[in-house]
Length: 386
Image 1 (tube, rainbow, N blue to C red):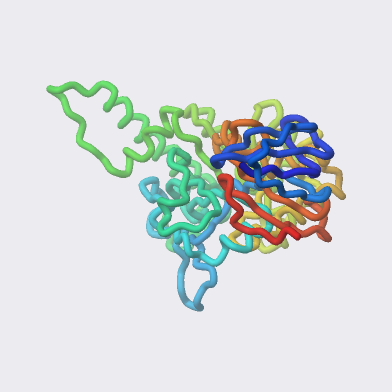
Image 2 (image 1 turned 45 degrees about the vertical axis):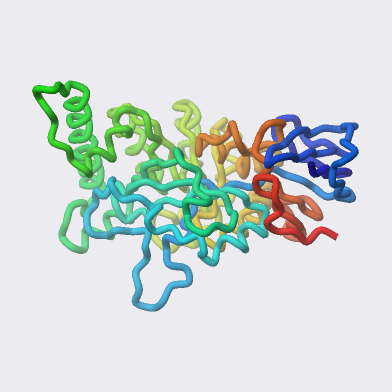
């Protein structure tokens, strides 16, 4: 057993505890509290007032998928730009557990991330969550059962196919392509449900991937920057009964009241985008604060690979523009865990959850603070404690 003592614990579930004691055994949090009795055989680590948070989670990454570092002239592994509908694509086939992003992001206090295909395609395929541990192969670090379907609206699919004189060339076309694919998947799903020994359905590999989507059994992660694209995503999701989140939500601040009313969960970020394309010109660091004030539940993302390490600092900047400390911590922990449907295991410092945590020498969201140690499943994978 490991006993982390004399720390400031950001529990998420039960506030911030001063002089806390955290007990870890067999990869699980055994106790988080104050005046906790420490077993005689425990390895005691005096943290001398350092902050402890749940391991940070980025629910929207592109680890190993965008070919970082990229060789000039080489494409990435995250965008199969050959057909706007590639629901059968699986990001697991592109994930490299030896990618360069894992170590620096782990050293920033992250313990879990989620990689998904890029946004060139209207339906891009499934992503998956993984722990930031070392592994011989990707199977050593992924979290099975976290697969979700990536979709995209707006400029990216238009740009990928419009120049080829292929559909979609317009936002109208993007909506039509998405509806058609979901319509076909719904028909296919209905046929499967009605299948009999006498009347077999011919299997379709691409449509099979969308069956859990149209049955509401697999969450959709829909890339949208502009407010009108967000509304299109909501419209189509309601038409087909999809379970979904909005990814980026760059103009979410324009329709925050609608997002709150419809209880739409967002994964917000990057928060400091330069105006590199029209649909992100209205990006503002105030977006999280506006969404919080409206009552929208959201997680925060860097939408990156190695640059994920700077998300805590970016979150601190958002706090300077009105985001509350409580929501800032939730957006990097429990809210991200909820997006991944892993909040029963990670996202807060509670008894029985995975022993995933990070230790900081100051306020974790301050740019003058350093992460000193990161524990995943009860093992230190980074440790620079005094």
